[in-house]
Length: 127
Image (cartoon, rainbow, N blue to C red):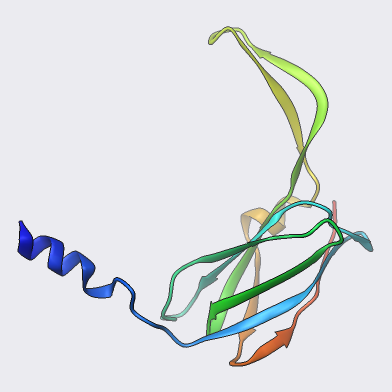
């Protein structure tokens, strides 16, 4: 059992080459006021998926993004104020809508991360 735990933790705390990004996220030219950005290394890149919350003014800043090509996926939803009913579960839940086009949270986009701090703005669309 101890051997399995040791094997599992071999990568724990492992450092990986990384860079930092900062910038703005807009949708149809306006700052995105809520959401999350996820960076996942591609093509044999080393490191974990890292995420950052988007600020109310559309700004974000993140350290420790794995170097190389990353797939960048965005999640941005808001509640409409309307409640929906699940008749099978007998519960009410808030209706939500996506603030961005599906391609940004399904396929995402690719960016190249370099060492140091880089300005990277993202211009998204709602349709």
